[in-house]
Image (cartoon, rainbow, N blue to C red; front, top):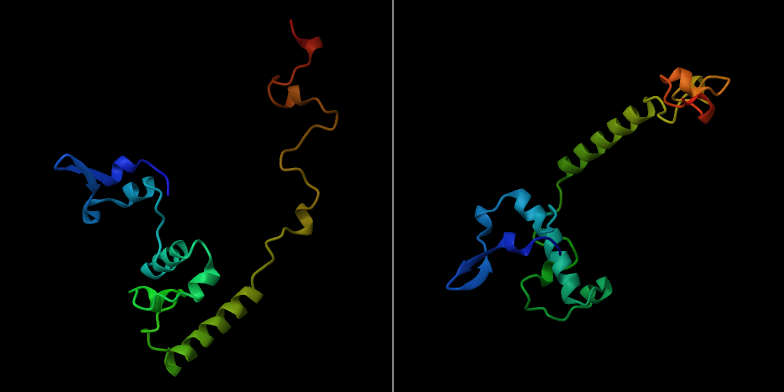
Length: 142
């Protein structure tokens, strides 16, 4: 993490200590180098850091007493599985999106604009006349 560490510190009894997060703004956290993420994502990244930057080692972690151990793989084992009604709703929304995407025109450009320059250039190449003389050649200068 980079950024201006002083933003995240305050003086207490002559020593630098971390500021109370509840009094910090999102802009200050961004200036410290933090990015917005869920607590689950933050725990996963912490586990990767603890395991020497190896996701494979996170999977093999033997520190079963660690509070983050059940969450180390990026999913919460405490979350209930989705109900059939929730799954049906997700399927319905996915089908609607697929139909909507199929009905959208292509955004890759049409044949009508293919090969057309965004800024027209005169056929004789005299840019100076078209753009107010900004492109005058050496022979036109006083």
